[in-house]
Length: 62
Ligand SMILES: [Zn+2]
Image (cartoon, rainbow, N blue to C red):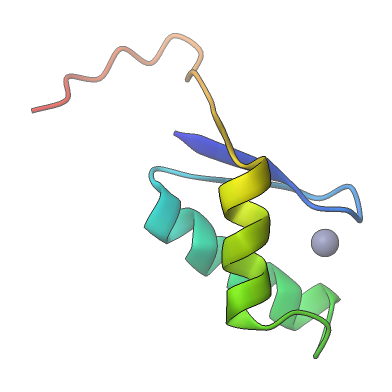
């Protein structure tokens, strides 16, 4: 899982970077209307997203 902490304090999590970006896009559209372009969000994700270990979730990768 990948996690991202928005500047507003919202925690966003998704299973990979691509989905994380989609979550960030949808959060930004709701909470930060017209503040962030796709390129800005991608850049924020690339700089600030981090790996999240799921608690107790030992899911097989295959
Ligand atoms: Zn936010």
